[in-house]
Amino acid sequence: MGLGAIVTTEAPAPVIIYRKLKANETIAPGDPVSFDASGDIQKALDTHDGPIMYALAGKDASTAMFNDFGGTKYYAVLKKGRVVSKAGGVIKPNKRCFINNASKVIQKTKQTIGSAYSQAEVQAVQNEYWRDAGFYVKKESDDDYAASDAAADDLIVVEVDA
Image: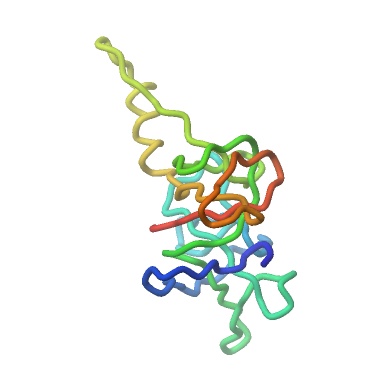
């Protein structure tokens, strides 16, 4: 397997959708993607609201999967299922994930609101919901039953349900 590969399980079949790519944007297999105001996909950043999905690998596994309809490319993104992506830091197994500013998967930090809450605290909790990028299952090299911590640039399996 490699970046953008669908990881098959005995769970229901993956859900894949096709969308146009935002102008002047590039994506690679395994990249987390979000949607711009017009509904086109773009590489997801830590400031983008969800849903967060993942670009899938094409036939040669080094380019993102797409179909060309009338000269317009529509890229395949995983809406639901498991996919290989890249870690942006240490992630513990079964932890919820965010995307960092380098478009890599990182472990979500739990937000709290104090008794005298501020607008910033409320926004942080809202972001926790809107910017969810799935949960870390295991490193690609781990056995299914023995997940280990991921480190920066590890190939990891993420379960997404956007």
